Length: 220
Image 1 (cartoon, helix red, strand yellow):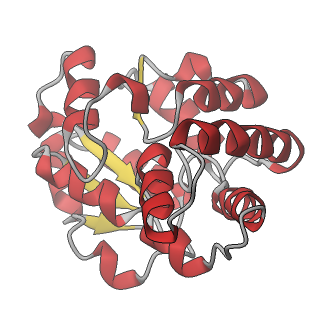
Image 2 (image 1 turned 135 degrees about the vertical axis):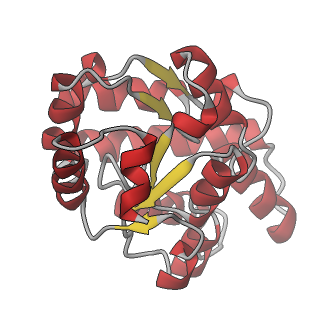
């Protein structure tokens, strides 16, 4: 969801900056890149340990949530081409699932803000899995609920941890650039696109031939 479906990384960055500034630490772009695709609870636990901070992770989570909620209600935007892609997938009847490292409350905020919940047959958030990306659990859980075998799934990702999770799940993965992710991190993806609009165009071309995994393979 973050960085792919919604243009959230600048807001994630600002929220963490504001949080850790309260404790005398500077959250930088280096930190943002390091934790792309990682569950927030794991990110905060790591920084608490590295910076030897006193508050427990639950307190960090609560404070950051309040900061982030305020910011997303004012600034969050749907990624360019996301609406078009979701409508196309719904039109052709392809099962669609969302596997995210985000928490359920945040997913709900996004779904309500942009009125897109009806586009997803299944949503799996961070609280529903034991292990975060790059572990494949979140995507395998989505596939299970969609009743689709992993080999017949196509994952769209913007982060290296997400790409690794998709490939670890035995799924095909299309990468869509995120300004905070170095290009080399897309090497494990089956194909890279510059935007969701490009992904939609590619899928439309495949639909006219043999849409399915065999069709996706033509883009490798």
